[in-house]
Image 1 (cartoon, helix red, strand yellow):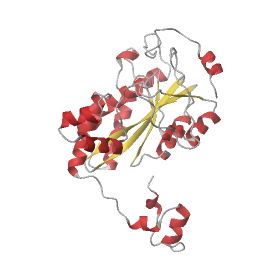
Image 2 (cartoon, one colour):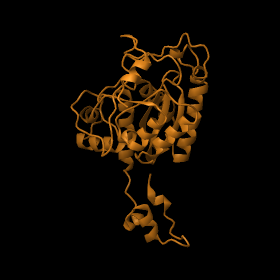
Image 3 (cartoon, rainbow, N blue to C red):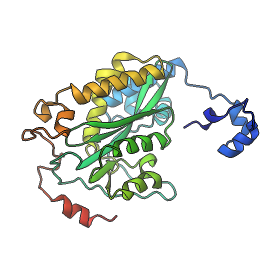
Image 4 (tube, one colour):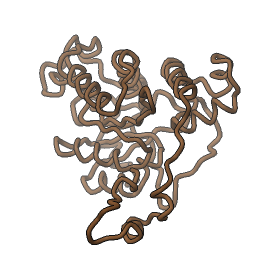
Length: 296
């Protein structure tokens, strides 16, 4: 979150200098307005997002070929957007100080009921004059979006807000995320451990480890975001709010026996629900065994 928004230039008791000291900001940063991306770059980022949503295994080289611009430019914009191609590769990044990476717990597990597994992820949302980042918490069995938040930065605060919102409704047995710093922070993992929730993290370069939320992003992008081209943050928030209500309460899923996520989450007949992971056909393992063998 941008702490500069908390500065009150006309505060009756605290000078700007003192407010900056309390917030841990350099005073010069209060007068600096970061130069945003050009309109041409914003449109390019929108095209990158569309292609990446369709082909998440495309890296900067292939995207540069598709879009006819330099690879260096594409790579820089992908860093701004917080995305990278999905493919098996050597580990080149490490968690921050104090961050722990947890094992992936969902291999060979069949998901059989709501609140057994939740997952979370972040995606890029283009606006006409900028962009936002969207995080959501999803119940794997019902595909219901339990909570979501928007942010103009990639810090972990909005992820914590989404997690806390979801935890006011219930709690899962396993919570799965990728290895992003927002999810590996001690604040985020500590909240889960306080509730006795087993933590699972995707392996790097494994596109199917968090497959259901990847499908959610595809639906959100093609059924809402790309159709609207939001002119402002407020309209983006209102549009996504309406869409997630539709997605949960009205949109029927073939994999859920033509029922809605809300109906399945509420416990309506689930005999036809197709809810296993990609690996569930290989074998069935009791969740208790996984939990007992997991290093907590």
